[in-house]
Amino acid sequence: MPSFSEVTRIEAAIKNKNSKELEWSLWYCQMRQAVPSALPGDVKYWRGIEVLVKDALAPPVAAKVYPAKKKKPNRGLGLGPVETGEKES
Image 1 (tube, rainbow, N blue to C red):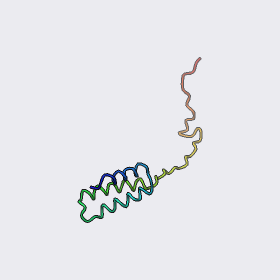
Image 2: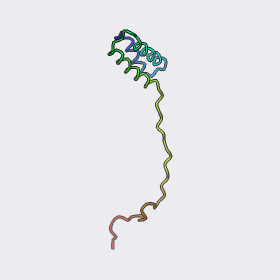
Image 3: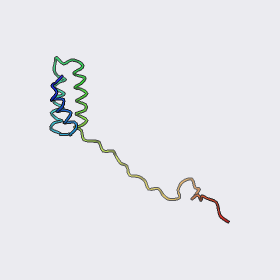
Image 4: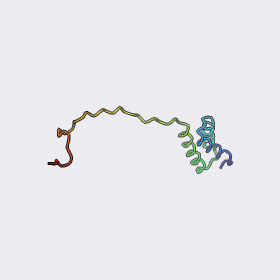
């Protein structure tokens, strides 16, 4: 596993969403996965960290808002307005 400072640096970059640090973190994760002597557990760990970095690096997707149709009054099943309560005599 890497020294503690690189992991701390990557976690700080994800937390602060610093674009330059996130780019470095992405490069570092890819470099750690490409090491020929890397153990399968290490590759899996760095792949997971790479996904976190990519999620933090990507801009948030805005939800698409569709315009709502305005409802016309007294439209429905043809019953019209329903009066509630009893008539007082």
